[in-house]
Length: 483
Image (cartoon, rainbow, N blue to C red; front, side, top):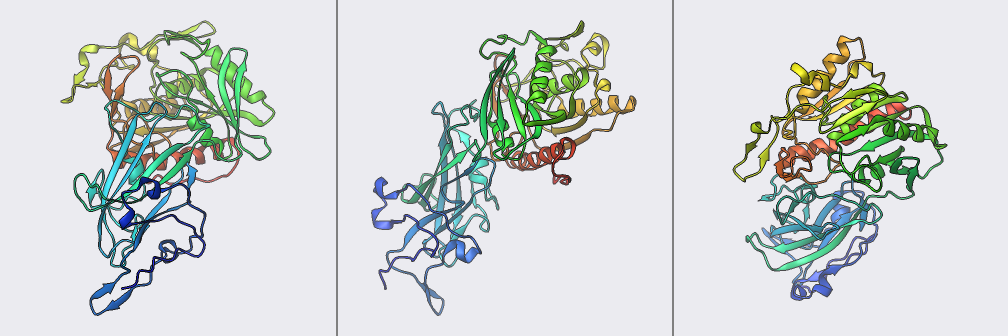
C-alpha cells in the first residue's frame, strides 16, 4: 500500500497530524487555516484517491486526519461555521469535542460521537451525531450544546474587542473518555464585526457604548438594554451594528457613577439616552428603536409608553408590570408589582423556580404596577420563550396585546418559541440552565431545552433585524416564524 499522504484541496492549506504523531501537541495544534473556496461537498472535503477492489476500499497506510472549517480560522459569533474531517478510515468511529474558556477562565465543553462515511470523510452538515451532548443532524451543535464545567455559570462576553476561542478536537473511537487525539484546531469567534466602530458614551448622565456600522451613515438607531445583572453588556449591540444599525448599549444601574441598585429608576435618564441617540449625526430619525431582554424588555415598554421619539420596540421575555423597584417620570410613579416568596418552588437539584413569585398585575393594588402601554405610539414585537421560568413572559405579552388593542392601538406581533427559556441570546450562545439571580440572591432555573432554545435564538435574531429594518427604515420584508 502507498505511503502517500492526502493531497489537500488545491485552494486550501491545512495542517494535519499523522496517526503516529498523535502524541505531540505541538504537531497537532493547527494554528491557522487558510481561506479556500467552497463550491461543493466534494470540493469541501477534498476526497483522497481511493481504490476499490470488490467490496474492499484500499486507503493509504499513513492517512492523516484533518479538521476543515469554513469559513477558515475565524468568523463572527452569530455566523455558522461548517465543520468537516477528512483522512479518516472508512466508517471510522470518532468523537468530536469543543471547548472554550470565558474571560474569567470558566471552561465550557461539548462532545458528540460520529461515524465517517465509506470514504473516510465526515461533514457535520450531512452526518448526524450518534450521541453525546446532542444527537441528530446538528451542524452547530458543538457550540450551542456547550455546558459549563462548574454549575451556575452563564457564558457572557464582556469585552467585545477580543474574540472567544473554541478548541476543536477529533478523537478516535466512541469510548466514554477517548484519549487518542487525531487532530485539532482553534476557531476564533469575534464580537466586533469588521469595520464596526465602538464609541464609549459619557454624555451628561448617559453611560453606554455606541456601535456604528463601517459604511457612511445615517443609520437606524437602537437603544439596547439587558436585565437585572446591571453593568454594561455590549455583545448584542456590537453584533447588531454589523447588520446596518447604530446601536447604543445602555447601562442603567450598577455601572460607574450610576445608581448601585434598581430601588428607584427615573425615566428621565432613559429619555436623555434616546435624545442623545436621535441627535447623533450618524443616526437617522424621526424615531429610534428599543431592544431589551428581561428587565430591559420591561423598560422598553415603559420608555415606549411615556417617552417621545420611540418608533419600534422589541421586547424579549419582558414583563408588562414594573418589577424590582419604583419607576418615576415627571411626577408619575409606577410601584413595583408585589412578590410572594412563599410561591418559590425548589427543583430536585436544589435551585429555585420563581415563575409564580410575582403577583398578577391584573388584581388589587398590583394593578398600579401595570405599565400604561396604551399610551405608546410605537410598534411592538414580543419574542417569548414558552418555558421561561423567570416569570410569565407569554402571559405578559398577551396582556400587553389586549391592552393595546382595547385602546385602538396597533396589534403587536408576538412570536412564541416552545421549549425556550428566559435568556434568548444571539445565535449559538449555549443555554444557561441555572445561575444566580441578582434580585433573588440565590440560583434559579431559567427554563428551556438546549436544541429548541438554540433554534429559537437563530430565528429570533432574524426576526428582530427584519422588524427594525421595516419600521426604522432600511430593507423591507418579513421573515416567517419557523417555530
